[in-house]
Image (cartoon, rainbow, N blue to C red; front, side):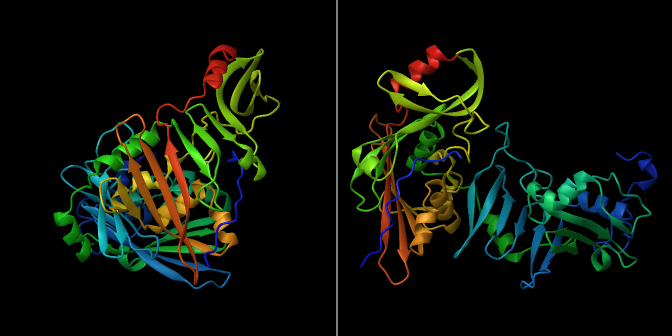
Length: 441
């Protein structure tokens, strides 16, 4: 017997050091590939910041008694790769520019070409900002007499957090950042310790000047950035425009329509019918307002609104979300933000150009989170198994994109939940558009 998701229809919630001359590292001093001629922290960090070929080992241990583990990050001028089990990541450089290297069961897969904020492709990897490296550290706070140091420089503390795979938000739980090097040199005695919430991440340099990974050498030699299929690329453009609707299909039978959700750049509205109301859904929405006057009051943020027989009723008694960007990730869960759109190379054609299937676990988990399925699946001890994407009439006025997320409870058959998306570019509600145009100034 198939075990279904409990039907819980809920409205999406809103959720420089002076005198550096004497500290300059000479080419002779850093020429040794084993780093045996580097004996102070200034020289170590300077050499590593300039280096384009090295490997680091990161050992993770916890006071709680959790099993320690370790992994390597290899930096070269053609690729960078982290081999952390279950969280592998990498980047590589082609003649066209940089691309991400995804790790799948069959080996490596190249992503689409990557671009910076100005729309320019990358011509270098180290220092590109795509990942953390020793290039992120600054020389402030180091001298050529330091061999052991508790790092207090905030820039270097933040750089250290990112270097070991943590985020800047972990700064508030940071206990210490310590660095040391002895007379044995870079490979034999240098280390960087980052302690956060009683978890120590011990960084050492395991190769300098000759780091490489044979499998990636082979892959990068012949790989090229992925080119997204026409229809998938078109679907991404439609979602990134942030103007579309969704039919809310009841999870209990995957047939009954409980209403329509409208996703626009400046507002979201869930319009639920009688069946949706029976499931506990109330028609309402959120509007993003960026310093506009309403009845003499300056509004900034995301505000709750509803539709009445006389028009729009805007609740200004409190800001529901501090950001006016209604479509930003973490405000209202717009499918425009799906990880899927950044990882199209992992979607495989499933019959023809209108049908694709994605089995990538990170993509599935992100989809569940965005569509608020995580708790419902957990409640029945189910896990997502695959995501099917069905497209129809692409390029026409009535084009649609339908997602089917398959899930499974151990010992049971697969089941699915369905998300039909339509009205791309024409999901506007006239009454809301009119209110924004005439009532907000």
